[in-house]
Length: 98
Image 1: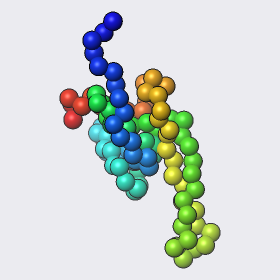
Image 2: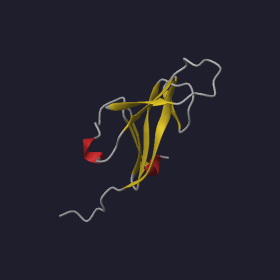
Image 3: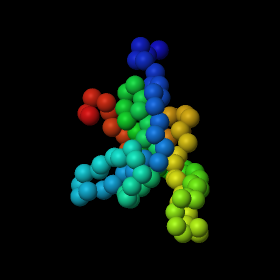
Image 4: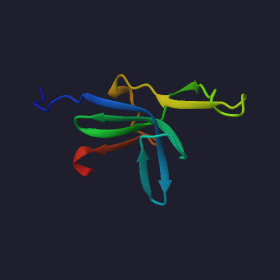
């Protein structure tokens, strides 16, 4: 039996954007222009950007001049960290490296 504490989700931010800038990846927890949209998850051990198994949700835009305009929020529902794929485009950053 391991003495290592288990990993716990501390916070989630849906609608986070991951933008590629050359070889470096930048994360923004806001709406904006980016290449991938998903969920930013903070645990007691790492920061995770999850953009697989996305859920699509329509956002109301009644304040825009175009009544036919449509915005969608893409996010990943994260309930069990073991179910998050370790493969790209998901991104994992240990807290010690931030």
